[in-house]
Length: 278
Image 1 (cartoon, helix red, strand yellow):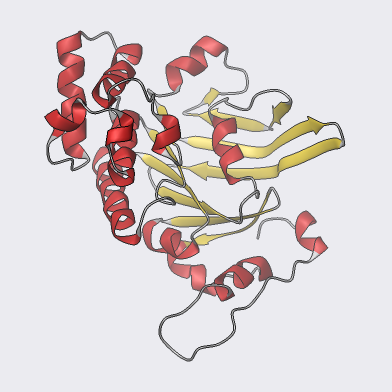
Image 2: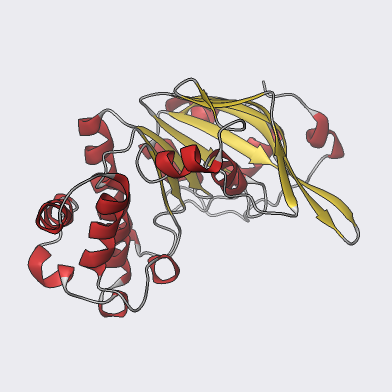
């Protein structure tokens, strides 16, 4: 479905070139793939590069960047607009900054449908309400009429998921979709995502800094460090990861059970910047 080979994203700054993503290669099919790493490692930049959302002074180069056989780097602006939101959708981190504050949430979901499909207002409204119900909002009619500031963080994230899935995309990129939520709401949102992705046969690229969350939710895990992929493994085998950076991240996690010990801190090796993905 998605093929990325030797992706580079660079930004020109007054002090020189900053390499945000360096030589990343990955594929995503009808599965759940997680990308983890520290803040600033380039995780979100990969999602934006796939959607053609890297703006100047950023530049994107790749040996191949393709979705369903279509070369995304060679696609014109009209083609990319048809793909974004219709075939590839992206759930951003905080709905408070992603939703239009002066427009009711129902109208925003409707707009997504009407931009990508030739449907009337009545049909768009019906599908918006159906999608609000699909993300387990108890009273879709009431929430449909609310403004973004009138919904909670968890409900706002459900509205964002509804908006991104209402067109039936084939690939969903979820950028830290639960980072601003408490643990209980996190689990609810992930359960909804899991059910919708599985039932629709979609691909999911989940961007997160939470190793344990990704290990329990995804099929495969990609670990990023300073713009590079340093390790790839199945989620079930994450605890057997070999790269010292991945081992260091796992060692930094606090444990409730077992003997208490001082949390480890990462000791970074300059050689990690040039190592190939195992």
